Image 1 (cartoon, protein in one colour):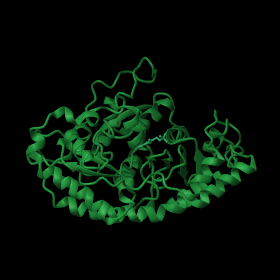
Image 2 (cartoon, protein in one colour; image 1 turned 60 degrees about the vertical axis):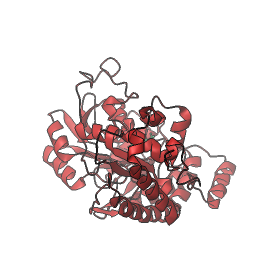
Image 3 (cartoon, rainbow, N blue to C red; image 1 turned 45 degrees about the horizontal axis):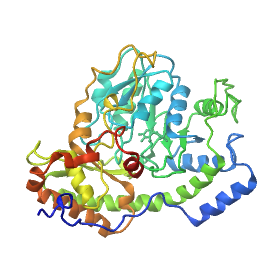
Image 4 (cartoon, helix red, strand yellow; image 1 turned 180 degrees about the horizontal axis):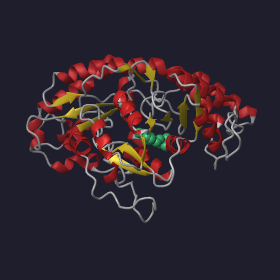
Length: 432
Ligand SMILES: Cc1ncc(COP(=O)(O)O)c(C=O)c1O
């Protein structure tokens, strides 16, 4: 019998990893306080905890203003609208991201144009973005994906050159810094998510940060059903809706912010240890370091599966084998959005689209999604050194028994080979 757990052997690890989300005793007190205040919603804007949290969060990232919203998708929609995106305007997005990056553009009336990602960071590739620019392009929407930043130097130049707005999707990048500047404070606007898997969470939630009062005023009015903003200097009257965050969510986020520095430092240290260990294992490759990152932010630890004999063992089977060794891991964490089962964007249901996306192909995104990328959730990195050593030992064990896997039934990849739409809810609940 093979040693591999997927083929009946004993797993490297049977102990659980740290749980996620984490919380503090003070969170319970703050929640109790909100409960007793009988003011649970988010009106007026900003309400007490929403205001306090937004100011502290903006300051951490070096932005002047922050505004809490209901979730990260809505944060992107609001930021796009504040940046002036109107019906039919094109916005360049990376193909390899969560569907919400692109659907937000559609909800704002715009047309998402997919560009490919860089093979070493999996973030928006600058040359691919440049080629996608047309006279209708109004904005670039890079995503700082998993544990890397988009090349913000080159993208800022590109945006300036073509008069485009630059909006950062920072759903994975809480607290991160690029050349000393906070995520979301490099471009015109930065958008965050506080959904349950994220580095800070209130179950659901979102944030937009900016240093431009004009955008901030627009956003405040927009999230609050069109009411005049708190500052009202520019007197912008916009069509708004209720996109507000509640006080219960914001009370939780205060504690999340208190915990962030320590958890981020743990993840950064563990990621370094893991990269060092993986560099010594043939057939896998850690993402190369990105010197422009001056403060790490690791939402998922991503490495590349690059076996010496490609095509013999599918990445999805490798991931299933790693998972069976007791290391929660995923390969199809994202698919290129234009191929995702969840992206129902056609000219019939999105009138701003003139064609569908059937002709789009981004080679690096497809390779990452279907052959190469391996995603490990961040909570694997907030425990002890031996947790990281177990991950490396499991990867080494699977690669060391490659021939057993090569002759195994490929269908053992099971749920790991399914798209997110096909996966049973239980599996998705664990990973996302
Ligand atoms: C890259 C990216 N953008 C946007 C979002 C949308 O955030 P939310 O789920 O809070 O709407 C997410 C989160 O799922 C994400 O990962």
